Amino acid sequence: MSFSPDCPLCIPDHDILLWQDDRLRVVRVDDPPYPGYLRVVWQRHVAEMTDIDALDRLHLMRAVFQIERLQRAILRPDKINLASLGNQVPHLHWHLIPRWRGDPCFPDAIWAPLRHDPARAGAWADARAALAPRVERLHRILAAHGPAADIPDTGA
Amino acid sequence: MSFSPDCPLCIPDHDILLWQDDRLRVVRVDDPPYPGYLRVVWQRHVAEMTDIDALDRLHLMRAVFQIERLQRAILRPDKINLASLGNQVPHLHWHLIPRWRGDPCFPDAIWAPLRHDPARAGAWADARAALAPRVERLHRILAAHGPAADIPDTGA
Image (cartoon, each protein chain N blue to C red):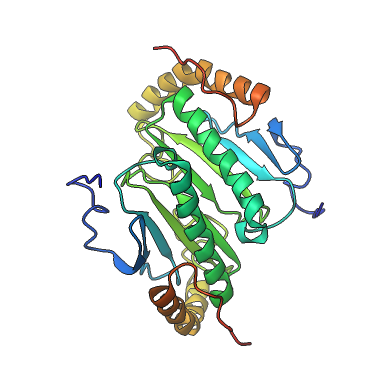
């Protein structure tokens, strides 16, 4: 397994692991404004999708889309954002970010400057609090069953 | 084919088409700071990757990764950024953005604020001019052969 001693994703101290197999891991990103934000990190230290072979790409993207399906079913966001950037940490990983019309950056990418709107921030704090049990549920399901988990009965 | 009359990607006036099949199209994004920036747009009006079926996802991602391979071979960027956001235009499309250490936002995402550094901007203008023939070549190859094009001999 390739490994780079200076890479933070090769020494995942800050990751909160939910699930892993021999090729990838699913981690929580507890970025306060973005409930349900997850990352899928390739275990090997490679930079690009085209640095891994077609079967590995299939395995990785299948996990990404299975998790998108769970995020949508459990969290009911207005949009899903998927991105593989890696400019700062060139170790292959995907950002899976549920987005809501009321979140602090919508409709911009989360990497755009935050919108400083006190009324919106207050409403979003309430919305986030209401989402917290569903985020916990998403984490619990992923930790127990991984990306291929059945979609649970999400109730009303 | 589903179609939404208010969606700019359903009426692609601003697209500069390079190649298409019945399911997707590859378009140039002539965003000046980012040479070789391309988008892959799903022809049908759907919002998310999990709104299309597994075979369509495979077709779309295969095109994305084939193009990444061409961007890397022809442009030799320092990094590739891939993203499916769609917050502003919820019609499924992928951004494929070659990145260089000297570009105006590196190592941030291109959606972050531009760095206003005159020395860097001057050096980047020179680098972009030097890249222009390779960008033309990428466009020509995609227009002639599509994402599955053989990787050309890129010389020294």
